[in-house]
Image (cartoon, rainbow, N blue to C red; front, side, top):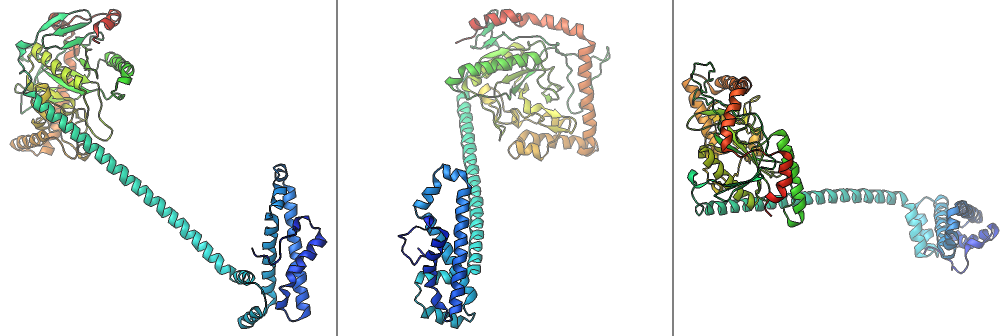
Length: 528
């Protein structure tokens, strides 16, 4: 577009002499800027010599790369006119450079020369651009910097908008989940009044086969994975003082063998989407979980996602489900609930961003029926049906809620039970366990209401003992460790007595089948 000559002749096929003559015709048109002959001659020689050198350099470059020839690009570049246009641009660049060096430096005189000449507008524009090339370079560099900054700003702004969108979407999903949970709780609460009242005499064993038990309330307990552990044995501490129980033969301390309550757990295992497409995979996950629970003797019962109830550790034996834990009732205080409470686990887990566990409808029904069976068999008080999150403690730092399963939102009403979140936990009121900001944050910003009541009770007891809660707390921690050690010694020092008690109580419990016979009959025992 800058050429002032017609393009009827291609430069690519010219020799060096022919190219020199060809370019001389174009350069002569700009020699009119100079009045003196010697200036015109020097301008002509310098420009043409430089242009011919550029052409030879371009030819060598194109010929030195074999892939250009193999792909046919060499001939295509020359035949399409791109070769001529490129050399034409270089020619005008050389003309502008020589004009700048040889024209007078005075701007007025240079302007008069340009106006006097008959050069085209494009040539003048190119010449002015060459004169202002450093300014144009600066403008171009500035534009690039501005473009990069704009791109960076756009990227950051987009990332922020995406984060805001994802956060808002997460809040909406959590809100919907909470709304759904609240709605389910309301439905459960509203349906409780239509369910039959709990009465121990209403539930009895109807049928007992090798792989299952069936009860009058419709509960069905599978015994395929049933196993044994050490027999139960625990003491009950008196209220308020949490006095260490003495164990001498004449002190009258009574060793208890039958379970006193139920602790509800979650398996916190991997969960597949609860859809019909995953039936086989869900069953496989459940079987793996049951094998793990049986191997580690983790719970007395497990309720899978289809509502099937499995007895694992038999009722007369302690399961390893509660660990460091405390609860109380009207009779006294219980420490280390493995020995005194039955462990019932639901196959579910809490979401990654909350402590909200989800139960299937089948698990809700099965959990209520199993609760009725156990309360009826052992005459368990409603006050002792509680969740793991409410009883779990960490004695090393005197904090509650060491394990968080069912630390909130357990459907007590749907199970025919009173709300234990309103009850002062003995870990706080009796032993002075407390909580920190991390626990409160995990619980949604604050602990359950019963903890506040427990703190007031412990503060009152400390004042009655002329101590501050901080002074009393280390003593109670030591008292807790002593009681846990006492329970351990009870198991070790009285194995014969414990075994005799278990044999006596075993007549009321389901017999334990062998692993082979249980597994072989399981397909017939499991309802479809």
